[in-house]
Length: 203
Image 1 (cartoon, rainbow, N blue to C red):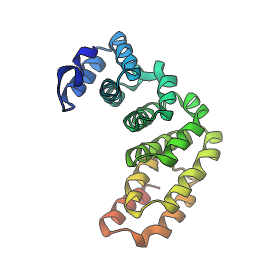
Image 2 (image 1 turned 120 degrees about the horizontal axis):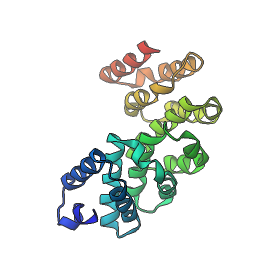
Image 3 (image 1 turned 135 degrees about the vertical axis):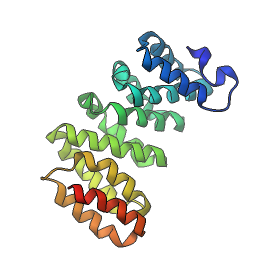
């Protein structure tokens, strides 16, 4: 399968990686997926293509990635930023399926979130929301991180991140979300406020 990734084909676009992900997901090719996972430990170009294939698989059939949860979590400490944000994207797809394993590495996830790129942070919000939704004990630790994020992040990030967090908003924590969002309301543009209002109406 590694001969079908973009770099092996001397391609600079992502189309081969997406096509390979679709193929592996469609036929549930666990052997092929294992080979792609092995590529994460190879040279940078190969690793970058492989993480793309894997998070595209995660979009289509996340259960296929569950055997490699530990391997993904270990990549959060990688010096290759592409692997870090790609891994966080994978985790955003599988957290609801294996919240216990993900929560065990919460400190590593939080560390990556703290220093991460825009995409890493975006995907982290989905991971945090998934953990909050999964277990009340997890929520006690993770919810304050989300609330603090909304209190301090850039205003333009609020709508998208609020949409991502919506899955974990309950009757018990809705007031916290409403309070922090309303305090930031004046910092947002009209279109950003409209997106936020759609979430607020669902609470």
